[in-house]
Amino acid sequence: MILSELNLQYSYLLISLTSTYYYIYNMNPVILFYVISTSCLIDLLFTIKSYDIIFHHICSLGYIYYILTNQISTDENIKSLFINTSLSFEISTNFLLMNNILKIYKHQSIINSINNILFIYTFIYYRIYQYGNIVIYNKVTNDVVLYNSNNNFDIIIIYFSLYGFYFLNLYWFRLIVLKVYSMIIKYFFRMDEICF
Image 1 (cartoon, rainbow, N blue to C red):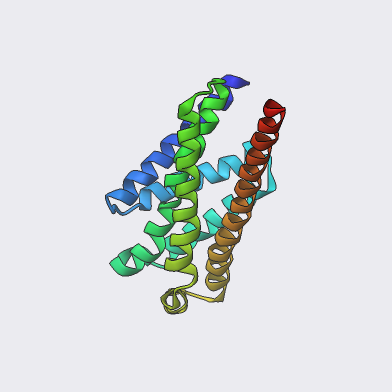
Image 2: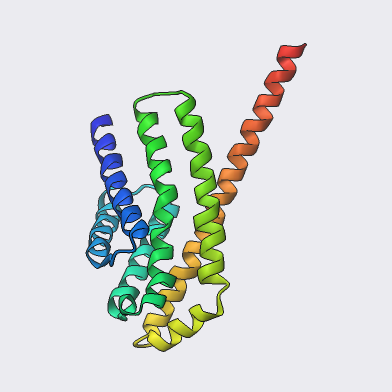
């Protein structure tokens, strides 16, 4: 069981690192989108256990469907708006997956703490701040969606995916804040016990 979980985490990490590479070097990720779609479908059918990950994968598939069927990847400004912003999510995912791999090896050290800090920082920056400013709160997004959509079904798919990702990221951010809060509380209660 551990070996299969480890292999799964490494395969996710490979896809995430590849997505990060495509983002950093501004490459056209059409082939990568097929890989991500396949990974999402396999996860949905065989490995996913939680509703938030199922919802994430459905949003991913809708997002990729929209980009591939509506020729979004041809205009550089639109490509930057939609594709690069979504690929930037994977930067925080790299740190999350590294944390999962370290947990499987039961390795605890300063590396875990640094990794967790980098995960939280990149999550907030790329998934909340950047995605919100570039996609959600940007008036150009609505114009691009309405202009480039083939039909009403495509408009529903992309808005569901765009806002689904954002609300899911806000939900995950809430979980992160609660976890950090509980760690701080435990630390201070432990300090009180040590002092007395």
